[in-house]
Length: 178
Image (cartoon, rainbow, N blue to C red; front, side):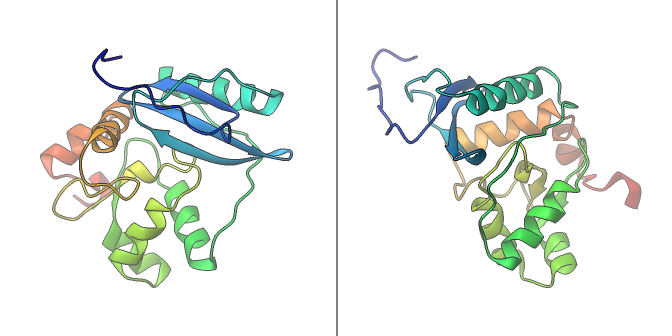
């Protein structure tokens, strides 16, 4: 942590806050389900898991950090519009090592690239629902409603971690289409 930067104390709404490359990750729990995963700035205060489900989520996210092929089996409390849920299902179907563009997903769900981007940014379960695998046709695109800062660096790390960044940099977003 940079000693010149203030430590931000986020509300207790997080059942855990853990270290992750380029950021911290907050875990939200509602009842017996995961209510959200939130990307936080690197200076966010860490918080030990407060319950068994938060501990389980932390273990699975940390396992993914070490192995991009790790899977998740967390109970999710999914709230969103039908359109958002459809986009999130499409995102979940993108295999590790691949990316899709906002336009490609828009064609699949019957929307516009901008609305797909909004649904990606509203994804309550990033990492588990890998919205980082969605990129713009002409560049990296945004991440969690941001186009710069630590979140874009986190998206780059996630893509590289999964083996996608090289495909992105060479322009071959869909290897099967070549």
